[in-house]
Each structure stands twice: as C-alpha cells, then as structure tokens.
Length: 271
Ligand code: 13P
Image (tube, rainbow, N blue to C red):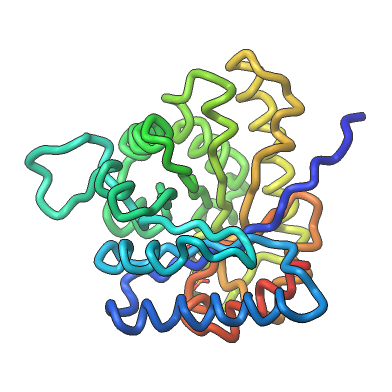
C-alpha cells in the first residue's frame, strides 16, 4: 500500500466570457479580501485558489494577486495557442500568458472542444507548449450525456487524457499537469455529478495517470501527486460533499465563481 499524499485542494474560478476589466478586478479583490479575512480569523485557509479571467484582464488580475500571502493564488488564461507566434489572428501564445504575470492555462475545456471544435491533437500540442513554457496546464476532460448513457464515460475520458498528455515524454513533465474532470452534462446545467459518480471517474483517471507515469519511466505512485479537480455546477452547498471524496482534489467553478460570496463558500466547503 502506498501512503496517501496530502494534496492541497485547489478551488479555481473559470470566469469564461464574463467580467470587464473593472468588474473582474473588483471580483478578484473581493475574493482576496474574503480569503484574507478567513486567514486573519481562527482558520488558516487549507486550500489554494485560482482565477481564469478573460485574456483582456489577465495582466491586471495577475498583478493584483502577486504578493498575496494568505494563500497561494494561481492566475491563468482560459486558452492559448500551441505556436510561439505568427499569423493566428485572435490567439494568444504561452509567452504572452507569461508576460501578463500569469502561470497557468485551461486547456481542452468542453466549450473549446464542443463549441470551437478543438481536436485532441490540438489540445495535446497546447499542453506540451504550456509545459515547455513552465505554465501549469489544467487539462479538462469529460463525457457528453449520450456518451455516459452509452456507458462510454471511461473510454472517452481515458482517450482525452492520453491524447492531452501525449507530447509529454518525461514523468517530471507529467507531474506539472492538473487534470479537471468536467462531465459536459453537468456544466452550467445545475445538474451535478453525485459525489460517487465523480469519485468513480476521478479514481479511474488516477489509475490511468499511474499507467502514464510508468510509460514515461516514472512510478505508478506518482499519480498520487496529481490534483484532479471536479467541475460542473459546483456550488457552496454541494462543494464539501464532492471535495470529501478521496480523489477529488478541488473544483473548477464556472457560474458560482462570478460571485465572491459563493466562491468563498466553495473554498470553505473544501476544508
Ligand atoms: P459551471 O460551474 O457553471 O457548471 O461551469 C463549470 C465549468 O465549465 C468550469 O470550467
């Protein structure tokens, strides 16, 4: 038996195409103030937070979070291109993300996959570009409702995971990845996976990560170092039950991350 690794819960807000420069900075400020107030009280935050604002406010939000010391804060982009530069109108590169002071990026979000038709190969190339640039990728995977109904959930997420990390040839590179399981049918629908349903997939993904580490010359136990976040209608009233599951190491929150009180409520639920 391997010793369980203590993975610090990460509560991440994906703001999607919401917030202006002003309202985004105000939202981040309110959340940071709330975290600082918790830190000044009796309980030290036992979690880390992350913000994924629109690219237009990435630099300002990153600047606001730099030096915040009540808990670790990761700031990241919602997407980026795999190429360094060039004729890719509308896209941003790893270097641009870094130049904003950000250190992370969401990749393969279901909206990128299913609304913008991003392919596994494109997502894999982006994950590699992020890791090469020392940007922490959050690789999102998740099945559609018809895939769950056809008992294809594990097959779909295993394939998305494998394709997403294909370009990472070293175990050390794989250690830098965060995975997010977001069942498509639970995103923005108010319908959450039950803690047991989510745990089943998270446990499976962790086993797959074990195989991926071995394939790269690492140890299967290295899978215990990887944080696997759950996303899909996470709210203050369901967060603690979900985060109580062994392999759920945090939340990737959409709608409820746009309100400081509900985001803080989710953070408190993760203790
Ligand atoms: P909701 O929390 O709004 O369901 O969105 C989840 C999500 O897509 C986070 O990336």
